[in-house]
Image 1 (cartoon, rainbow, N blue to C red):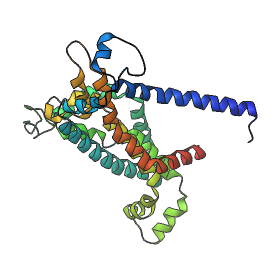
Image 2 (cartoon, rainbow, N blue to C red):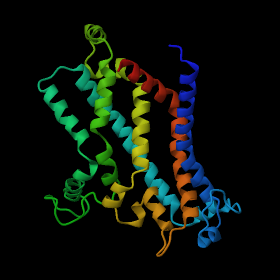
Image 3 (cartoon, rainbow, N blue to C red):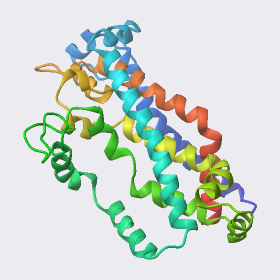
Length: 288
């Protein structure tokens, strides 16, 4: 479809406004991270710093136990992403390709989970994690200790599967023709061989997209680590950013410097898998 000159101008203007709205907060954070302490004490409101202070990045990394925060975030994110890819792809494959009794009611029940805000299930989830038997000082009835609270289990296990991931995997596997399954069954393949030999090698765009979504969600998660952990040794990067909150004021220049450094792995992750991510988004939009 050929656009008129006026339509192209309107499209370019809309893209320029959207790009500015996306980039401006990042530029503001970068310029703020380069400002000196005295600029905030004077209360001056200006975008560009009066003097540049790149040493703020080194100062920010000297405040707090950042190696521990980074190690905790890396372990939790890596295991959660790997586990969620395995569970979500297998569950999505089962709902899309297998025939079993009660499939539709189970799937509809799963979809209800997508409509419930995460904050609603925090208290039941907290009580379940606290009552895990024989962990954290608990007896076999799950009483007397803290269970999985303040441990990697509390941060990883609830992230291993989710309704959105299963739904997305199911929609991806539904696009393949049923004849593919029949040909594999005639050759003697079972369900697991069908998945690992036929569907998994074609799941690159799906796994890349799910992996990016889960990586961003877990890496940036502040709420759940705040609720489920309480020791310095289990702090993640997002909790570590709290060290810049003083008793009476926040050191915004150091906070912005640390925030930009903490965000770098997400940027790297996107650029590494951007081809698969864009391919999956285009395929999903074309198929409607």
